[in-house]
Image (cartoon, rainbow, N blue to C red):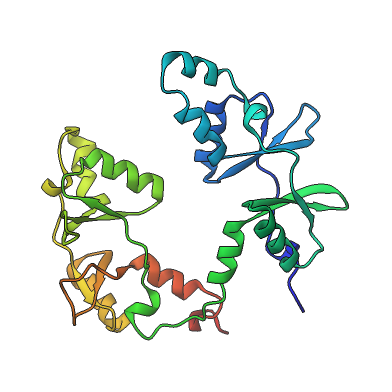
Length: 270
């Protein structure tokens, strides 16, 4: 049986008032870690969508004091997209996909009997693709995170800390101008500065520690043993056949726990 929109959608609506300032919209998007909000009128009816992309106009058109003053007077209703493209929760996912492709949009308001009940977005479809991956636990490459947070060795530690916070990463890989791995900065590396204060000019190269690596083909047991022995929460994944190449990923304690928690994992079978 083909899946329906209701099988993938996010129920509930994150809304803002039509007269919300662009600054208020930015705060809501940031705090809720979303890319768009439904704009509601005084009666609570959905009248538009405002996204992070829409806010680019507010930021980049305010290049001088006069433009900034004008842009700061704008509200969500001034920049929102409307009317709202919507789909019924009961239609096949394939029809929703066709709408996103044909209209070149990123999200659809989901309705049930014409009443808004949620949103379905590109992120939901990406998550559905990721969910088709079968649980595997043979080697480091089966579990590691392919995405790596990277910064240059000349990056101030305050900038690295901000990026780690905003991205949800617990560490950042430090590289030189050619992409060669120099070290790692973790939350533990930054702890002393909470107590003693931080010089905004201090660079990550002064606080990073050597990167502990592991081969992508190594077993999870080897990875776990190496973490335990060295009191590290994460390892940089490399290919031992080409150790000088850019790292392939990161494997952390969280990656292993996440794998154990997956429905298909042997840890979840009764």
